[in-house]
Image (cartoon, rainbow, N blue to C red; front, side, top):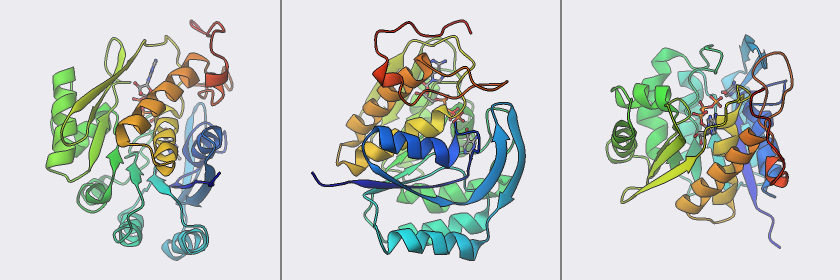
Amino acid sequence: MTIKSALTIAGTDPSGGAGIQADLKAFQEREVYGMSVITSVVAQNTLGVQQVEHLSIPFIEQQFDAVWNDIKPDAVKTGMIATIEMMELIAGKLENTDVPYVIDPVMVAKSGHSLMEEKSREVIRNMLIPLSTVVTPNVPEAELLVGFTIKTLEDAEKAAKVIVKELGAKAAVVKGGHLEGEAKDVLYDGNDYTYLTSERFPTHHTHGTGCTFSAVITAELAKGKTIKQAVEAGKKFITDAIKYSLKLGNGNGPTNHWGHRLQGLPNQEGK
Ligand SMILES: Nc1ncnc2c1ncn2[C@@H]1O[C@H](COP(=O)(O)OP(=O)(O)OP(=O)(O)O)[C@@H](O)[C@H]1O
Ligand SMILES: Cc1ncc(CO)c(N)n1
């Protein structure tokens, strides 16, 4: 069996539910060898973000080169990239590669703490999205990327299309976690829409859902799956991870990365 590898470039979550830690756990569950480049170290937990420290640009570059020049990944994702300088560095590193690239355009944590400088939005739009295979914004992130309000499924479809046709991504999934009703995500791949729907679980233990979803997509692309197959696998995985989410900590608990192994057991609704 050929070993496939995936790289996450992101911030950390010492409580293990989001960021680099969530990504590595997801890669492992999908049987892809996981690697990481840390952009910012974040003091956070299920209650929120307490403090952020950015690593220097030369040190982020050293980490990137250490991985890339030794074990070149089969797919890469970026999560929290807080500053313009970090984005410019990453764009420069990825612009001449053909490695599938997933962008989770992390802007604000669930707790409301900003994880990206506001002035960086322009740079993610202009420099990173044109390089990407898939972009996975939630509704507030998609609104900031496209500049209009998203309230309905039609708005989400329009936003996904703008991210592809105008901003230059190969595909975009606008996640419906923040909308009402079923948890319905919309994938646009330049030709067709695909809808990914699950029931909405009545839980507040959803810390790190976006990170885990995009990490699974990255792992599947590393294995050579199509964009549609990868996004469908991501949806299936995150649905089980939320269904069996973990009542850990004093705030919004993390998703359960082994949820897919608990099929058929009662979930933890109503916690
Ligand atoms: N309560 C829920 N029940 C079922 N699926 C959900 C629920 N909340 C979110 N999802 C799904 O989880 C995935 C991640 O979406 P979400 O909008 O929560 O991401 P996010 O806001 O980027 O997450 P985070 O910023 O915490 O990492 C999507 O597929 C979404 O439909
Ligand atoms: C490091 C990091 N990335 C992303 C998120 C979004 O959930 C978070 N809370 N922390």
